[in-house]
Every structure is written in C-alpha cells, then in structure tokens.
Amino acid sequence: MFEELSYIQIAFLTFQAIFEVVLVCLAGFIAAKVNLLNPTAQLNISQLNIDLFTPCLIFAKLAPQLSFKTLAELAIIPAFYAISTAISVASSKLVSYCYAFNAPETNYVIAMSVFGNSNSLPVSLTLALAYTLPDLKWDSFIKDDNADKIAGRGLLYLVIFQQLGQVLRWSWGYNILLKKRDHNEIYRDLNCIIYSDNPNNNNNNNNNNNNNNNNNEMDSPNYNDNSVILYSNDNTNPSVIRKIGYFFQNLFYSFLEFMNPPLYAMLFAVIVALFKPIQDEFYQNDGFVQNTISLAITQLGEVSIPLLLVVLGANLCPSNEVQPASPHHNKLIVASLLSRMIIPPLLLLPFIAMCVKYLPVSILDDPIFLIVANLLTIAPPAIQLSQICQINQIYEKEMAGVLFWGYVVLTLPTTIFVVVASIEILQWV
Image (cartoon, rainbow, N blue to C red; front, side):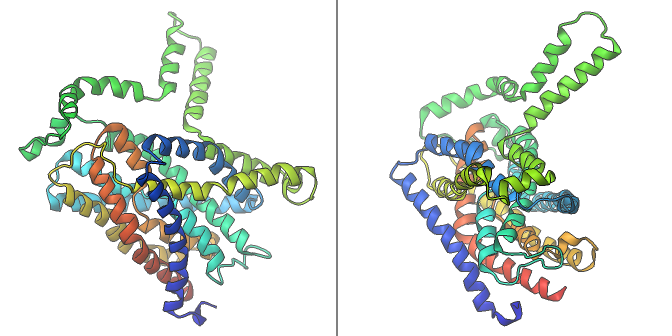
C-alpha cells in the first residue's frame, strides 16, 4: 500500500518518471541546437504525429478498454474542465490587474493560464506513473485491473481533456486571445515603440494593420464559406425542405471542421468497443485481425510519445527568427507562470479532494483519474500556444521564456508535490 512508501520514495519514483521525459526532450533540444530540427521540420513532424501516430496510440489504448459503463462515467470531465477553466481565467485576470497590463498583455496571460499542456508532458508522465507507482488499481470497478488498463484509462481521461482544450484553444485562443495584432496596438498603453534589429520587421509592422482583416478572413473556418455558397445559389425563398437540407449540410460541414485525426480515432475506438464481437476480433480472438491490424496500429502508436517529447525539447531551443521582446517581457513570464502553475492548483487541489471524498461518482474513485486531474492543474502552458504565437507573430520571446521556466524549472517540483498530494488524498478518502 501507499502507506509503506515514504515521501522520499514517492518523490524518487516521480523523479524517475520525469527524468525519463527530460532525457527524451534533451535529445530534441540538441537536435534543434545543431539545426537537425529547424522550425519547419518541427512543424512537419508535429503534423505527422497528430495525423498518424497519435490517432494510433489513442485507438490502441482506448478500444480494448471502453464499454457502455465506462462511457457513462465520463460525463463529469467536461464539468470539471469548465470549473478549472473559470478558475484559471479569474486567476489570470487578477494577476494581470495587479501588474496593470494592457488588453493584449492580459489576453496573453489568460491564454497561458487557460490552455495547459494535455497532449505531451502529461501523457508521458501519466503513462510513466501508471507503470511506476504501486496501488493505482481500481479493483472495485475493473476486474483484473493491471498497469496496461490503468494506462489506458489515464489516456482516455487525457484525450477528453485534450479535445475540450483543442476546441477552446483554436477558437477563443487563436481568434481572440492570441490574434494577430498591429505592432502599435500591442504597445499602445506603454508610451513606447520597440524596434527590431531586423529592418524588415519594422517595415512589416507598418503594414500589419492593413493586412489583419484579410488574414482573419483567410483564417476563418471553411464551413462558413460553404454555408454562404449554399445559400447564394437560390434567389428565391427556399422551401421548408430545402431549409432543412441547408441546415443538415451546414451541420455536416461544421462536423468536418470540428473533427481531427485524434477525434476520429476516438470515435472509431468507441465504435469498436460498443460492438463486442468486433472488439473481441481486434483484441481477444488471437486471429488474423489481432495479429496484423491491431499489432500494426499498436506499433505506430508507440512512436507517438517519443516524437511528442522530441518536438517539445526542440521548441525549448531559442530561435533568432522572432519578433523583439516587449518592455514587460519578464513580468509577462512571471504572470503567466503564476496564473498557470501556482494559483489555480492551490484552489483546485482542495476542490478535487472534496469531490473525491463526497461526490458519489464512481470515476472519482479511480486513482489514475485523480493523478490525471491533479497533473493537469499544474501542467505548463500548451506547446501549441508557441505555434499560435509564431503564426500570429505575437509575444514570441515571451512564449519562449514561459516554455523554459515552465518545463525546465517548475515541472519537477510541482509534479512531485502533486503526486504526493494525490497519494495523500487517496489515503484520506
């Protein structure tokens, strides 16, 4: 039992899991430093991982584990995500008010606070802890529970958090919080203009305001354009049947715009899991399908986590191809880390503990759910925010600083603290 482990032993087990992650990230950092992984290569590898390897990992972990009973228990995750997001927004606004940030700076801090990493570092840590920490079995709910099943459930919880975050990140985050801004707008309330060492950047800044509207139009979702075309083909008032047809067509385009390869993998995993004969053919009967298709998917999925961590390490390598730092560079970094990794966990950890203790929801009894929920409260800002900042050319140096201090400095002590706190909660309940 956990009582047999001292805090030093628990901290050492957690340190081993983190150090494994650090070593793989270090390989990516070195590769970027010697220019083996330039920004273009990083984007290409990330895209390959998102489109191929990560969906295979999701399918391989979820399809054998899901059932009707499991799916019914997952409804609490969106509610928890909404509460944690509200607390993060409130924390970031309070910190921004204390620092007297202007509107763009406040939006940046909100983005750093709300959009935590849920698809690289927490995934690798969850999988490592599932195979490292003892007594994470959910014996009251899962028959013959083992490390593989624990890891699968942990990944399932993370995937749901990931997709909720993806929707918010690429809508509210991309289009509002971290949208492309005119150079003067960013520094409007600072009574100063910062010029880049690169004269081309200064010339481009004068043209940014004229191009913003065009860029925003180009970045808008495709299904909006399709809906306009659908309605523009008929000059007369459409009939009720035609209106219904337009509605379902637009709904279909919206669905396609919303879906991505990891979501498709999750959908297919649910379909396989809900039809027991198909699930048995994939994972129980030891036949042709299990020994070919299932094994191929599993092997492809095993590539995902190392690639994620290599790209994460490459992202931590500083680049000279960025905009100049803002006058509040250091304050923005401190405010972002306070709003993401310090203040919200202090509020959320007691809240999670009370939920586990008193709410009659079986999923809260799953030890790996508690580990996942607590890890997500202290996870550093999402790596994808760096990509958004690069695309929109906003606060790139600040983003690099947040990534360094968040991943290199704060992750180890905060993760050890959270794992120890999670074990204390499990013993308390």
